[in-house]
Length: 33
Length: 334
Image (cartoon, rainbow over all chains, first blue to last red; front, side, top):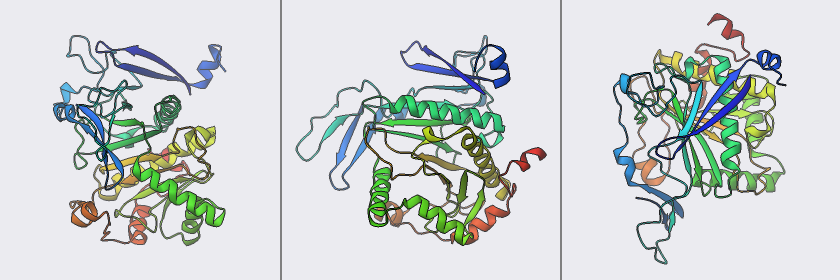
């Protein structure tokens, strides 16, 4: 799986990170490793 | 109010965090703060309408950065420090029902990647000396939210139990030239009665010295200090053995087994801990399907555990619970 993450800052100043995963074959098709 | 107060008798820090008294306690399922926020519904902790895995700073942290100034003045005897650190919540899945046992192997693998990433990022901060990844599961443990999730505490000091393990491991290496944990694996494999399940990269056992009846240790066969050293095969094998152990726990009595799952890794304070060894500890509080093992006078008051069972018998029970292997074949039947 290829992992990517997106960090956002919540209204009260705390951070939150979304982790998303896609199959390696799909990542490769999109130009990843 | 949040601060570290020094316990001069035990020589350890106590975290005071009075604001945690107000944290959300067992809300109704449709008001779960860890679910994704649905359009038109009440806003949860996670603004997105969907996610795979999400981590965020705990709203009621025991440690925070920057930490507030201590509310009390220290004395020569009673030292005080700011409770500087980070507490994160890790939501394993957007699905409210279920537990980590229900995670597919792919989802378990994803979670292992997230744990590794959080360990690396939090451990790289100069005010963090130790990163503790753990999960409290079940009302018997005292969870306040039932949504499948774990926590991460990034400490400004090495917690006392970890320090004790480090001291023992260093003493053993200085005496024998070997790793204490590698020796434990060798001795348990040679005896074999306390092995619960194993695969190419990990061994799960109720060790000789278990303090809880069903206390499982998962140790890496290779001498790693943290997840940062795992290769792809080891990550896959960890996902499989974790899934196997969790299923065994649930299949033992046909209930969702409560537990504390704690990952022990080397400190991140920049020193060399080559003598330490990665492992996961499970501390389930039940000693039978309906009886809790209480940490009563002897355990809480003297720090000396009484285990009413022997590891050899309890390991045999877990070994017989499905799945009986951790080589991946059991997953074909799911």
